[in-house]
Length: 253
Figure (spheres, rainbow, N blue to C red):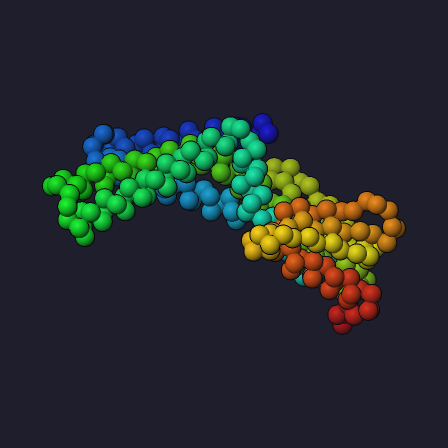
């Protein structure tokens, strides 16, 4: 948590400094300065978001494989989990959702001004200045960016990975999460006797759901995989890995 707090402040200060320089050298408080600063904020936001989105822990997961283990399927958590986590963080909730709403309405304003200025031609002379001023609605994205980076990278780091050892014909499920911390849990699937998946109509529509695994030991305990993206696909891959193991077809040479 402390590392994320420091990184948040570092990202925010660097982005504000960069955008401030652009604003200053574009004739401060002129239409051109709001245009340049707004577009720079959008670029900075999406560049850092893309960097955070790329963190799917693939390197860590491959490094954890032993023997002749191979990855047969990998999937992360649903987008709804990311939105829920941001909403549960009081500080992030305001810092992310308010700038996103401002950017949304700013985009609508840009579209309306462009329409009435270029197509309908009902706006007075100088309407292009309004267009440039409207780009200022994107500047608050710099406030959202550090929190988006934190929550997106943590969300992407949570991966469910089906693995099978081709030599021992033994299937496993690796559960990874954490960016600065390293958390890897191995669930042996050869003891799994049932999988349980429940989805409402809307869960199915959005490919969202929780998946439960129960072991042969027969206790009431179940391993729950929460907020899985495309849980039906994961459930099929787990059952296929179990079937492959029990049928003795490990694909060995």
